[in-house]
Length: 312
Image (cartoon, rainbow, N blue to C red; front, side, top):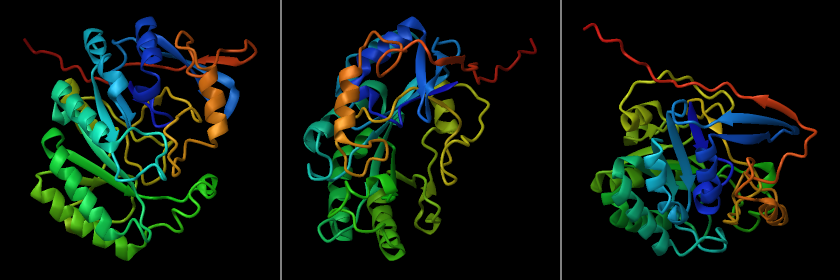
């Protein structure tokens, strides 16, 4: 089983204490995001969790917990997003210089092969021009290239729920001309820094620029981290253009305080504040406690490792 922690919220930044307690107790309750009356119990023991994929924009609060996770025997890697945007776009993040120092510390601790840099999403407007992205991507590559092997990027998707929050910042999705210009420029910059470049959840074929389609929860990367082959199938709960393998996400929506205007996982800042007030690190659920009248189910969990039999 692969644990995603989490596409729905930033667990390393805001909920690392809760996460460690869940690993120690060996289970978590996950509320169904489409039906709040259904809660699934997910086993988190190390013998069934093959790998944890962390998603974060600020891993600093999790750094002190990594030795504990290692001691408990859980393999993991990080998808770490660092973009070139200011507080108008990402309201609640520390300074980017501070975040990049955290990225470097994380890489030094766990290895550059276990930290993927995400430059995601790319927004193009009058201020955030194609040339702006070339300049910023190049500067960030100068700083981060020795601390990761791979950069994944994508272009902004305008979901209906974010139309209000992005007004005045994102007027439209990135057009094909700009996509190809950025792909060509980024490819040259990445090559000069010995960085592998890939897109996340993009249908457009950019292979002519040496850019592959990424799988963020990636079978090959997981097998490299854990040193063992696994059985993998595509996650059919994700978008059609997502190549990730199947996983169980233990996060919750509407509880991330980064304040990114482009976030698909946040409905409103008021709801985020309300949910964060309901969080208790001792609860088996990320937000609140079971009321007692929910339908409780148990998710089937098993290791995906392919154990080869010895002939001797």
